[in-house]
Image (cartoon, rainbow, N blue to C red; front, side, top):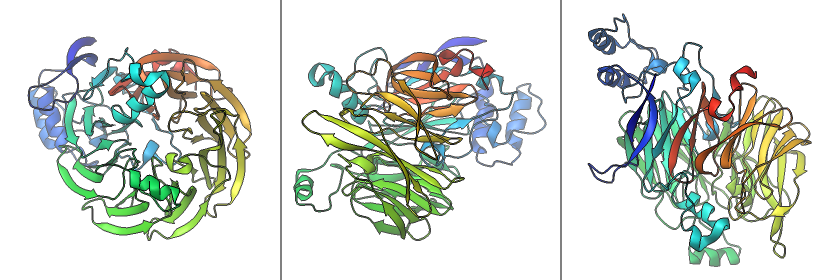
Length: 522
């Protein structure tokens, strides 16, 4: 049974100020909120028996003899959530392959049916309306400016029944994964633009902005190292249950990219040209490494004891030791344009020892065109294994290369200058198929990575969510969910897809709304 309820919209700036949006949620027992508050308090104790929740449940007529484990526990908000949600989120895209897909047991029926809700963040635009300042900036630049200044630039993190969503408006939200109900919000000193990292009951996220000051442009013209970021920038840690700030580390240069985690340490690559290693618990510095250039939106990936990151000015992919920060190798390709490597997150296949990166190359200022080049490197040595130059197309206004995702020997990656999505062989770089993104518009589409799940490839690009046949790229279904998707990779748990969009909304969408027969395709 489903009922229509009024859901809190954007987070209020002061108590009592709310917007409302209509969502669908499962009807709940009257005293479940009291039960789930007790369960929330024990959420991060994965193997613990929640005695207090059991007592409360018995008082409500549940009669359970022992409480649920963390994977069963709702993260507040009055809704019991089933098994299937990941218990941590160590890096961008949930892992080095960037394939954010999580199955669930058959007993999780509601999760398999799919939750559906929309949460309006601060200053969210109407889902069916145009981008911000479209009458001034035009159809080409307005969507990009909206993505960079108002909406969710990258996407969301989903852990233990909570959706964590970063907003360019300087807000970090924690939402109930079943209902979209606001659990808590935090305010940063600049835009939040990544996937929040969640480990051991702690949420870590960074702030920053896309600008360069005039003096940095002067330094750039003199071929000197430069720093990206006009305003304040910090790395923040919060209690995952309450949103209480645990620590803050200010940095020189922006912290727009998503952080990564390994063995009690969080890592960030900054607009000031450093890779930082900080204690998850305290924020104290473990080590700091200055590299040539700066990081923009290239999120770190970790495989084993190695960090991989893309840097611009000059453009390199770096491999560093997680223990010391020592550079193990760096690699580049010819003809890189714009912010190139530093604006793209490398994907890593630990099983095959391959690192895949994408960058724009061969810019032609006369025709305002460029190409994308996808290339693979040996993860241990940095040796280039193959290079695939995609066809030339119009230069996109921002974030000019798509993020790669790797699954079962295939690299899936978009080319925004063509508004086309490609599948390439992971071992040779040969193009296996391509899919044209409908209705992309002059801003281009295909920046975000795809997700492989239950025999279907899922993609959020431009105004639509797509379901594709991973074997040949044929369209299986699509949905206009409202707003527009930038660098967003879908996060799938059971039968639900979780997304953030450029219009300032966090969304939950049933997979069946995109591809009705998805469950039959395995």
